[in-house]
Image (cartoon, rainbow, N blue to C red; front, top):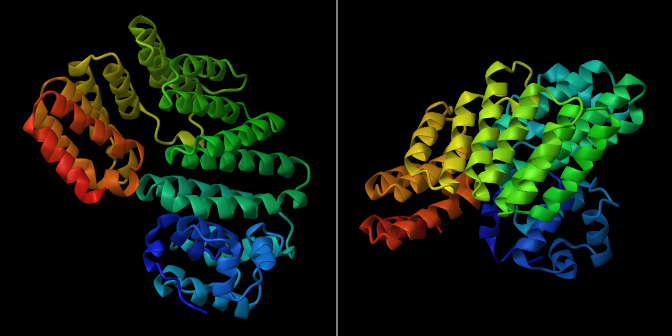
Length: 408
């Protein structure tokens, strides 16, 4: 078998994440997409028939043989450091993150998955905690790295649905709704709208099935965010209003929906309605104490940054600078993705305000994070900043373009 002629393919984070948890169907599909290879060519490299490759990719056949596993590793040139210390049967794919679960929890989850132990509250508590760990890991590592891990863990949770009875069944459906919402966000963050839409729809259905008003409202709010990202202000407003009116939504979730409606109005150039919705959202968030676990980041700092984005849409440059600076000052260093995005927005605000030096210095301060965890959104925003500076005939525009070109 000839080795992979393009070993640099293993620099891709999604491929590395899939190999780290030994999700072989995802490894094969991702490798083929990155190398533009057919199933037949991949099969020739790893010593499998095309029909076997297809069966593995579509999860009709599991890779249980040590020999087949080794042929895949050697045929595709999987780097040893990507695999790390192999665990024969990891209880959940989250174990690629060091020290995520205790040995006792890992053993319980393994026995539940293998059918030797009934699904119980303690196991579901552990899965909730794992999901919380992954949400925070994504703040630092970015969506590209985390997508494979989270998708594999979703598959593991989905397998447990048949074991659940009574109240546990509803709780599993709620957990599936949370995973689907998180996977939708990961796809959306990578500008993969069709995939995000599919996950959002699943999340919404499961949320309604289990009476999970907070998650149903969150899903609609994030669909509004996707509409905003695609420049569709009116659709953003409509979805956000529907989210804010969802039965069972907490005050925090309603505040998120109202600020999203405000941003939609700002995108449409409707300043009065934009600030009215933002003021109402701020009133709610100031007194809210019931944030669901996936809105752990939501607070005054994050809300100030959201106001700053609306100000940018409306050309209120000085106000945008102030709000974005206040927001960023409250973000922990671990929030690399958010610091990259809002930092790029702050650079945009400085450029709009006629402060090219501040725009350039702000952009330079977050350019590494934008390149590593902020693609495509923060990265594209920095290119917009460079273009705006060039239109203003500021020499900092060329300097920023050159700095971006090094990492493009």
